[in-house]
Amino acid sequence: MKPHYAHKSLKLLKALEPLNSKPLVDRIYDEILVGGQSFTPATAEAHQPAVELLGELMNVHAEFEAEAGQLQDMFGEYLEGSMQTNQENGQFFTPMSAVRMMIQCMLPDSEEKLLEKPLWICDPACGTGRFMLGVAEHFNRVLECGYFNFCIVNVDVDRRAAIYCTMNAILNQIPSITIWGNSLSLEIYDAFAVLPGHAWPWIRVAKGRARELLTKALESSKKPTEEIEQQAAPTPVPKAVQPKKLVQMTFGEAGA
Ligand SMILES: C[S@@+](CC[C@H](N)C(=O)[O-])C[C@H]1O[C@@H](n2cnc3c(N)ncnc32)[C@H](O)[C@@H]1O
Image (cartoon, rainbow, N blue to C red; front, side, top):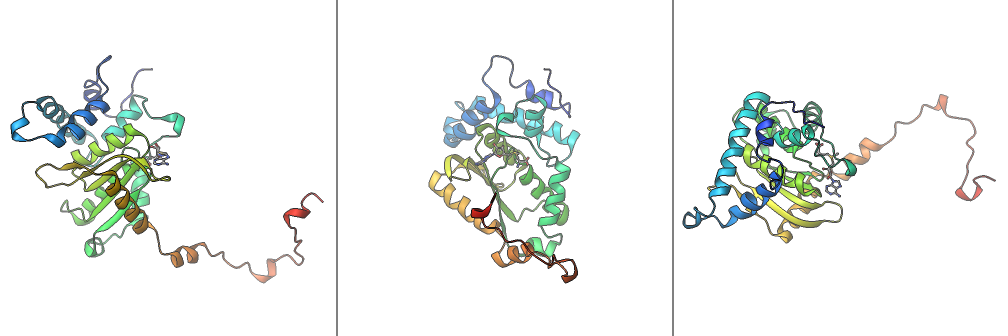
């Protein structure tokens, strides 16, 4: 089937992985994310292919932003348009309008509250990072100064999703840690932190440290137990509609 892209600029991304070439996701991982860790002015020449690839991705991203708007999911749309999502494992991406609505329900809508204390947020099944982009969009809208007072920990068991999520964070300069791993078993295969404003804005995170940060973010994403219990408490049924006689049945009596 022919690829179908919602935004024309995604064809430029497709052009970065011609047929029979190394997949884009592997080039990003090998050359930029991992390769970039050993970049020094003295080794700059050896890193030329990585610098060129990063430059090309930044150009495509600028085109995509001009077309789709700020903080949109370039890589997720690319995977969807070229039918590369991992459908066997139930991978689909939430439309940004639904992401926006959920974030509005979860995050405060006042500047004062958003600046109160830095937020630790966790997306344990992040895909290409739509919730990360949505949170950044929310901060951008409420604070109007491009200031992000949060760190989001993203996790995906799918390597491609985790790599593209990291690249989305780099291109949009979102403070985050993206873990390629399993958020249920806490197995970690690799992890990268994005630190906007630093001279080299992404670093590889050791697996033990990534697990600690994931545990911290999972904990602080939880609502206090009483709050959950209060929300889950059933509304009492008015007396008038309660059945007069309740038939009590234990599992042993089923079918008797
Ligand atoms: C339905 S997609 C949602 C992606 C994203 N949150 C969104 O809404 O756009 C679910 C994602 O969870 C990932 N996933 C499934 N099981 C996981 C696990 N145990 N740990 C981490 N990620 C997992 C899949 O690879 C997939 O990318």
